Length: 115
Image (cartoon, rainbow, N blue to C red; front, side, top):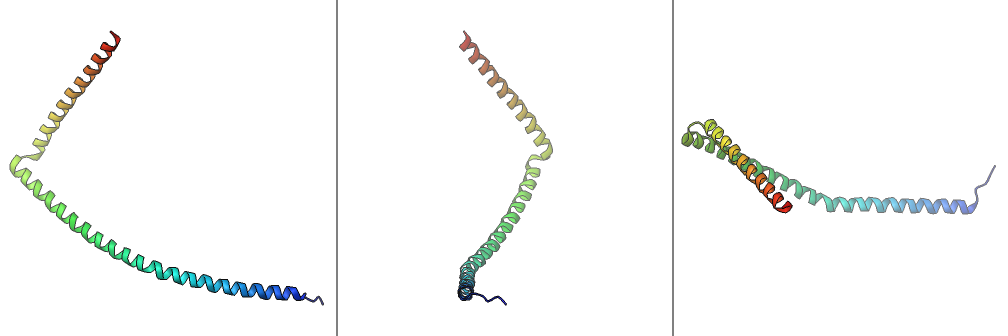
């Protein structure tokens, strides 16, 4: 039968002790990490609930305001679709005019550079 050298037994025992100590240190570190992180996570969860409640409140107010604006628009302008179409046509006309003026100014600028 082969005998294990004495130094091997001591090295194995030392490794076993170091391994146990390292495992205890890791468990302690995890516990310390848990105790530091959990209050932060709890506070974040609470803040998230507050923000969610505020967002729902703001959403409800925005919906109410939009409905009020719609009713007022219908009341003051009569038919909002007709007014919207008119505004769209006017915006297109103004946009085309501005584009034409910008193109003309670029042409004039180019002509001045050339001559």
